[in-house]
Length: 311
Image 1 (spheres, rainbow, N blue to C red):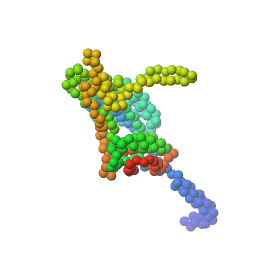
Image 2 (cartoon, helix red, strand yellow):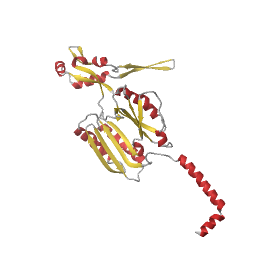
Image 3 (cartoon, rainbow, N blue to C red):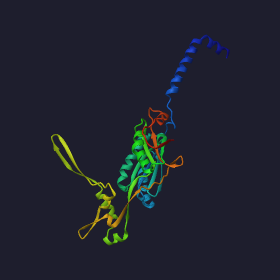
Image 4 (cartoon, helix red, strand yellow):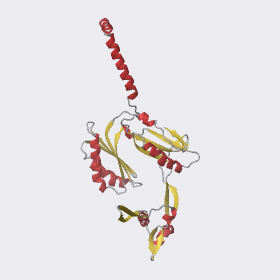
């Protein structure tokens, strides 16, 4: 110990210089060190989620889960394939070896799902997600009001808050939960359906064919191309009621003759609250490459709307 002290005293200028350099480096690292809610980690797991409305459990299991499992088990490097099936939803987890390149594994899963997509129901919605720390919610906003309806709050979240959050550097996904989304419900009248011999499937097909946009053609004139479209989209209750769903002796049968159209809201299975009030929650995820997670979370959004609560 005595020799060490003598060495330090003899080389005190060098020791002071090294100490100052380390101090400067420490201060620099202190202000530039990335901050994050979660550490940057990659898990050897890919999640495939399929949604199909209110499809029965047996149809989901036979028509969705089984074909996906059989295809994904053949992905190179796949170690375990697990699935969960419920009414209208199915989840398939693919676990890989820890030493695998997750980007390549993700591309292989995309390729396999594309191959089997033709065998799945056409109305099935498929989402494929890599399970990294950025796949979990980082921060969010809750908006609520004593004067505005949940529909208005949903519109504010969708068209005011969501675009601003999506424009923040590092944010790559924004989801809105809660609120009310308007829609129309068609309540069929069984006695009228029997009278005109019209089935619910015919009504569904008639509405699909009526609610469309058709491309009519194009005209080239003076170095300009004019495109022609026919807009048949249903925009109001009256438009829906006047859809022709069949014919009776050459006379069109309108939807309002066999059913009642009611304004309503889409069924929501998640109810969100904030400060003991029904609210709309906007949750966003961030990759945060070259951007601090805390700094991304602290970015403020602008706009005049109802009370806002940040979580």
